[in-house]
Every structure is written in C-alpha cells, then in structure tokens.
Image (tube, rainbow, N blue to C red; front, side):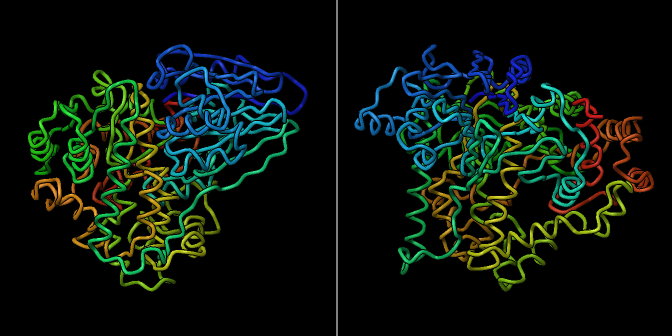
Length: 594
C-alpha cells in the first residue's frame, strides 16, 4: 500500500518535479517507509512506500526496468503475484525482486494493456511505456484503491488522494453543482468520475486509461458482471449456492494473507468481520490479532458491540484488543479525521474507522475487514422489498428508500448559484438501473450499489482512514471472483433470512448462532449520529464561519431551521442532514478550499 503521484506534459515543457514532490509529501502517511522520484522528459512519477511485500530496496518505487522500457508507480496489492511470476518466468521473463510491483511491470510487457485482466487484487497504477511514449493509468475492479486526476490544457496530474493534488497547486477548486446534488442526495456519496471540486476527477473503477504523449487519451472498462443468471448454474439449489459461496469466500480470505508482515482483522462483532476471523482460523491461522472499538452510550443507544466481538475472540482464541473511547476524545478526533478525508464523507462511522486505524497501526501493517458484504449480498433493509418490485420500477423503489432529499427539497437547501434545473441524481440512478443486464429490480440495485455507490462510500472511507496511519486494509467480500459469483446468484438466496441469507448459511458452519442471528449492527457513534454536544458546536461554527457565508452553498434559512430543530435533520439510512452540511464545510475549510 502506498501513495502514488505524477505529472505528464503535452506541450513540450518539462513536468513540474517540485509539484510531484509536494503531492508525494502530502501522502507521507500512506507510505512512511520510503520515497522516490523518477522522470522521463514528459512524465515525472512520485511515490511514498509502505513496505508489505519484498521489504528490501529491490521493491522500491518508482520501479524502472530499462530492459523493458517501462517505469511504474503502484498502490495496492496483487494477491496472485506469486502465481503470475511463475507464469511469466515460464514465458521467458526474468525478475530482480520478489515484489508484486515488478510482476505488474512484467505483466504489461507480456500482455500490454490487457495486463489488468490477469491481476487479482486491489490496485491503482501509473505506468510509463517509454518506447510507445504512453502513460497507462488503471484502477482495480471494485475501486478499492483510489486514483484522482487534475487536467488542464497541456498537462495531466494524478495522485492517490485529492488533497495531494491540492498540494500541487493550480486546481479549479470551485464546488461542482452536480457533485453537490449527488452529495446531498446520497449520504455524501459522489460517484466517479466526479468529485466535489470541478477541477479534480476520479478514474472510475475497472477502467484503463491510455494517455499519449500528445495528450490524446482513451478509456475502456475491462470488467463488469452482468447480474443475470448463468446457465452453468442451472439446477443449483440452496445447498449448491452455499457451497460455492463458501468456497469462494475461503479463497478470498486466504488470498489476502499474502504479505511479508503479520495480518490482523478489524473485528466489529458483526457477521461479516466475524466470518473472516472464523475462516482464517479454519485455514490454520493461530492467535490472530483482532481489534474492536467502542464509544460512550447516549440516550439509551449503545456505543459499542463488544459483547459480540468478545464472543468471537473467545471462540477462536484471538489476541483481541478492545479500544474504548469517551466523548471527550471525539471532537479532536473529528478534526483529525476531516484532515485525513480524501473527500468529504458524511457517514458517522468514518471517525470510528480513523480512531480504530490509529490503534491497529501500532500493532500490524495489514488487516482484513468486512466491508462490501451488504452491497454484494443484499444486506440492507431496502433490499428486501425490491424482490416484489417489477424490473422497470427499480428507480422509484431505490429513490424512495435511499435518497436523503428529493430534487425539490434539494433546491430549497442549496444557495441560488447551485440550483439545478434537472434532477441530476435521479437521472444518473435511473440510467444505471435501466442499463442492459440485471434480470430483476434487485439485481439492478445490487449492481448500482456495488459498482457505483460502494467505491465512494465504505470503500473510500476505509482506504482514507486506514492509510492515514499507514495501515493496509484488505476486503475479502470484494474479491472479484466472489463478486462475480454473487452477481449470478438468484436474488432469493441473498434476501433470505432478512438479508445475506446465503452468507448466513455459510456462517452457520463456522460461527456461533448468536452472532449470525443478532440484529444488524453498525459502527455506533451516538454523538455524531445525533449531532449533539461539542459536535453540534463544531458544526455550528463551521456553517456560520465567514468562509461558509462567502461560499453560500446553503440557504441560511435552511441551516437555521436545522440548527433550531435537530429532529428535522434525520435522513435516510440513519444519516443526519445537519452533519452532512457541517461536514462539507468543515472539509472545505480544513483543506483550504476557497
């Protein structure tokens, strides 16, 4: 896991090496173990290294193979790199390190732009093909590793974080009205390619972009499951699906043990992380390091799930650490969390992940986590009714369950400069849900959840918060083969037992029933969910700051109404409208966006 950066010039001037250095320095926390800079006339690459595989200098980056005419910066982990290395050796290639980085370089030399089809893992890649004078940018299938782009005539910059591009300078930092529409509609999610700022975009997941030295470029999407029934599975019953999903999940968990350092588990006490612990124990991992976090209770709402995480830790004899935090820890943590956010993220558990990652990074460099299971296996409450919705009714059903605001309300929220004539968020969702494939309404929504929403909510949240402390988090439920299998699985097996039915059947083979049949939990942070106490003061200060008045994102009367009556602030999926507004202003102010 690392931080990558670079600049390509198309106007016969040299790249700004100082700007690339500033970008890399802004990502020091992502790669505290080393740094590097390389230039080839029209492209400069920068890198910050977190040593996980091949801890020697031979695994350093930017990695250059003069004999192949290639240079590379890479963030992530290729789990099948040992198998690929043997395949490439058999094809006549040689290696000078034991790193997965070099395997990517040689894979490109062997397969060209199709190299991504051979990679199993999470990755963001910037590769220079010196002979063809091309820059190849690529992102993994589920968007687990980020890649941000800032383009101007004659120049392209890229980096692992948005603030790194801000550090380079010369960015259009005006708020994008369409992105603001998405942010306020979907619990602060802004899907690729947009970000909240007009001048910075994201390479979408499962995408390769090839940039020529004259500035021309092309993109292709190299993977996207169809979410239709596969004839190869005709005749499968619930037992067959349980067996297939169980085998795929076991493979996914084992794959994510590849490392030259110990691997821990973020154990929330929920079904998903508990399954990872159980399957790792089944695979022979002893005395796993596991970690849980909890906060003060508030108004009858528990601030932790230690009962369940303790139960799992005892069952599998893990080396378990509880991390208990008081409300007094929260406001300073909120400020530090916002500094670490690569984009504004309004989910209340972002702070929990930041604090958890800080503690976990003191003990391990790599951990597995349960993110993605709900999107892949229909674990959310709004998935259940979709089994009764006709295919062409998916957009109405999803909007009714998921949107925080409809278009009319949204235009009463934003300042006059950000009012939009069209319902940009509804239009994007409707187009995605109506796209070919996806046999049923639920199939279409799970496709949208997994490939559009997920990369810019739980996935981005975990990457930002863990990498702020130099911690690499791996997500087995987002294994490409498991996701492909789940996409083909008939919806009735997923929504069974109140959601994630087929996963629960796998879990019954390895987990105590009390963990499987418990009510669904989240990372509870009551003070943030309710925006009360010192958190409320923080939000009020941000929304009434001179910078907020000058920016005029929100109508003052709307902000005043939420501050006067917090009950109005509750939104879909447990989110809080006041926190959404305050968080956005806090993020913009923290990162010096004017």
